Structure formats: structure tokens, C-alpha cells
Image 1: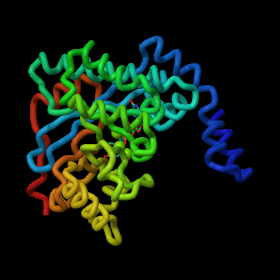
Image 2 (image 1 turned 90 degrees about the vertical axis):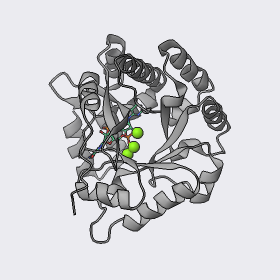
Image 3 (image 1 turned 180 degrees about the vertical axis):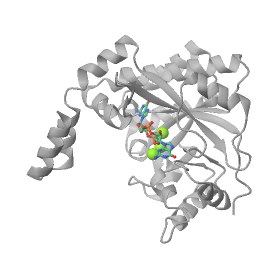
Length: 286
Ligand code: C2E
Ligand code: MG
Ligand code: MG
Ligand code: MG
């Protein structure tokens, strides 16, 4: 049992990695079965224009119901899928589901500027990934120019020839690439010039302390300025308070997502929200 393992791990002073291995042990087969049975879902979190509050797009986020009214966190099951190889099939399913949903919204009159889908570094190492994306776009009819693939800093290094070629090729077809959780990895800023990327997503950990004493405000400001200088756009993650949105706007960030606007919600709820109104832009906040 996971809680017993956690307790034992603490008592024995075992490291985080071995606790994690113990806690996720046994999820491998249920996850594969859930994918096969069609139990997995894709939810959507609005990407909001910070100035107007308008919904610009959505980030697709995988959801696995735990059977008791709750959810197994993707932070728990994505690593399981990466460890057992299921990530390729899981990622392909999520991409297809998201593109098919967004295409259906278009025909119902909700045309988003962009649909953002997360991609594991392991998917990018697969030489067939570019073809998969093209096939999903062809099968669903979704416009490549509206698709954004979110990859992590470690996955876009020019040293990884397969990933580099795949991303460059997809970009040439109009697909945009975002670096997720920017600032938490190891990329040197100068290297950003050389990687095939369009968008930087400022990690939630930086946004969380914005405006606080001794906060990351100057780091976030520098990232936004650097992105602008390189011709990239920025999206802020994890905006929870109006003051954070205000500060991000003042620093030059135009777009963001977070619980202030909405968490990820099922497709129907997303359409109802995104189609009916813009979120408050909080311009009245001090
Ligand atoms: P991510 O791509 O950085 O996604 C953003 C995460 O932040 C989501 O967690 C979202 O629910 C959460 N979030 C958004 N706004 C707020 C906020 O204001 N406050 C807080 N506390 N959290 C916020 P989620 O859905 O649990 O996903 C966790 C991670 O799992 C994702 O991080 C992503 O790395 C991974 N993931 C989710 N779906 C997929 C997928 O389809 N494929 C792959 N490869 N990874 C996925
Ligand atoms: Mg993401
Ligand atoms: Mg992120
Ligand atoms: Mg993040």
C-alpha cells in the first residue's frame, strides 16, 4: 500500500525515487486497462488573454478517474507510462482526442486560436512521432497552425538529433512548439536561439511568489524580456491571484492560465465557458 510504503520510506530514510517506485508500483496494468477500456479523459484549461480576459485557447490535460469520485494525478501516472512504454500509445490517444474535440468545437462555432498538447520527451525520441502528428491532423482535419506542442527544456536540446529534426519539420508545417515549465530545467538562455521553439511557458513556481517579498519578479521579468528579444511569446502558468495577473501584464506577458480563471474542465464545460464569455481582466485591481 502506498501510504504504508511512504511511512516505511520515511522511517528508513530511503530516497524519494525509491518511495516513488514503491507508490506507483501496481499502476502499470490498471493504466493500460483504463486506456483500452476508454476510461481516460482529456480535460481543457483555458489559455486567457491577460489584457482582455478573452479565451485564446486551451491546454489539453489527461485525466484518469480513480473509480471513487477522484482522480489519479497525471504527475503520478505519466511517469508510470514513461517507465513501461505506454506513453507512446497514451500520448497518441490524448493528441487525437484533443484535436478531434477542438475540431468539433470549430464546427459548433468555437474557433480557438490554439490547442496546446503535452508531449513526453520519450515521444520525441521516437522517429515516427512527426508522422503520427501529421496523421492525427489529417484524420481529425485540425489545422496544424492551431496546434501547439508543449515539450520540456531537456527534450529540445540541439544535441538530440531526432527530436530536433522532428520539431523543425513540424514547425515547417505550421505547428508551434512551446517549452513547458520554463526555468526549471537546465537550458542556458543563449541556447534558446538555436532550438526550434515559439513559446516559453513560465513555470508555476515562479508565478506563485510574484509580488511577494523576495519573490521571483525580476527573474520572470527577465524571462519575458528575453523571450521578446528572441521573438518568442510567453504564457504564464498557475495564475491564482489577480495581483499576479496584473504584475505579469506589467512585465509584458500577454497570456496565462490558472485557477484564477479556471482549472482544467471536461470538454462540454470548456465549450460552455469559452463560448459564452471572457474572464474578467481584473483591471480594477490595485
Ligand atoms: P503541465 O503541462 O505543466 O500542466 C499544468 C499543470 O498545472 C496541470 O496539472 C494544471 O492542472 C496545473 N495548474 C494549472 N493552473 C494551476 C493553478 O493556478 N494552480 C495550481 N496549483 N495548479 C495549476 P495536471 O493536470 O495535474 O498535470 C500535471 C502534469 O502532467 C502536466 O504539467 C504535464 O506535465 C503532465 N501531463 C498532463 N497531461 C499530459 C499528457 O497528455 N501528456 C503528457 N506527456 N504529460 C501530461
Ligand atoms: Mg503543459
Ligand atoms: Mg506547464
Ligand atoms: Mg508546470
